Image 1: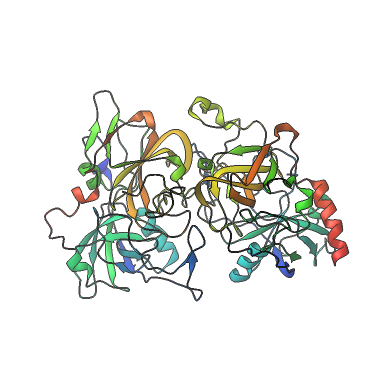
Image 2: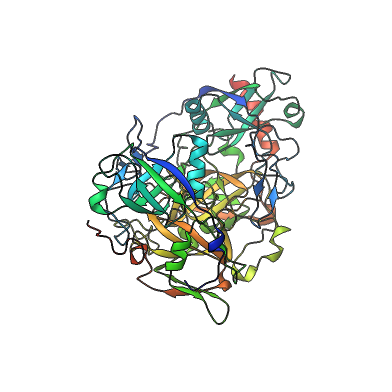
Length: 292
Length: 309
């Protein structure tokens, strides 16, 4: 993105995390939109075979978190890890057979979500230690004071297409527009933690549930209409939030594939360009072998 | 059709124990409002003196303030059960402390770890202290009123409380009609969306008229004329039979149980009581003539609860 920023003034912090196990309880089942019981994997652990650019939905899964799901064992240190880590930050595996492998953060979901190359992913499991080089919070755009940046590494900002236009607006490329009706769980939460589940993206379910979002892919850059994420996540007509789809398939009602927040401000501060290539896969991991 | 409420089953009542909550804050007192201003939240849980049923949700400069006392339980699993099984109108009685013997009723519940809002007469509420024990006679989940259409699910309501609310079943077509203050679109549903309706309230993202001065009604931002604690409110395109979520053509009716919040994504909260397809569950906007759950009605329920003891 061709845009002036304070990127050179941002520090990096070295953070530690651990690949966290998938969690369940003795009751096993949760319920879907029509009361259907389900017990499905996808959240926590290392979810294989789904990477940036792949469809977000269409899997037998709930709260699908692509790649490795990372936390810190200490509650306060974990909040620092979740708040300070940004999309695009580099993550290195420190222990286990995949030690040395490098991946990238694709979002947050009460875990830091890390996409690795498929060949590396097979060697990572619960308990493996990782190092996150966190940088990006505090990023500000010099010529766009109305736009707030969240959870976006300077590297990702540089990679995004668009930038400052002659008319002063910020050009952003998005793969999909999301109506305000789609905003599910995550409304009312802070913008630096977890993501915003989108309803109406439940492939294969009734027309009464569809909001036309079944085509979302992991890594898609999307625009949330009438959403203000500058100081938390709320409905506000005339505001726009740009996010990246970091989680996929859900069966739990009121939940769904979700974007982590990247940019937010008055809609008039943006010039939105529809672009099917607006996906993290277009910029991250270039030059690496990315087997499925 | 709801699978949770087969017809013909009798509801049971369970005596539960609630403990009056003490408010909790982290090491930093500030929260941030929708315009980026910091504030110290007051009235968010515990015993809140001041707000009364029938007053505007914007009458007090507070955060999620409910007209009563919030009840919790020190064991988290028991706390979830307290929130899930307690229903609007359930009788409560204070067991310990200066207000021991005082009687009231459940007004609603709040989410996250689970809280039950207990309504007490103001003079009793003022004698309450955090950690006082309050017994709740929980009854109502799973109850289906006789003659109720199968498509409409009723929840979070004591069987005795239905009679004091403006809800009627039509003889001719079997539809249910609720008198409400207003009907709001589902895009105003905030915190609570995606969560289970038996143990969470649903915040409505309404900004106070004073703070909505920058609002653009032409852009669709609602500036509510009047919404008071205890009102019945309908939300369109919302199905709350299990978790709360978007479903085109459905309607949900809830009782306003706490006041506004400066936090983005938050606002006055409803405890849902009815949900169903819009052709079977209907809302009748009564505007200024609307009367929802009132102090008078809760006093009647409290008196009836004494007879049950």
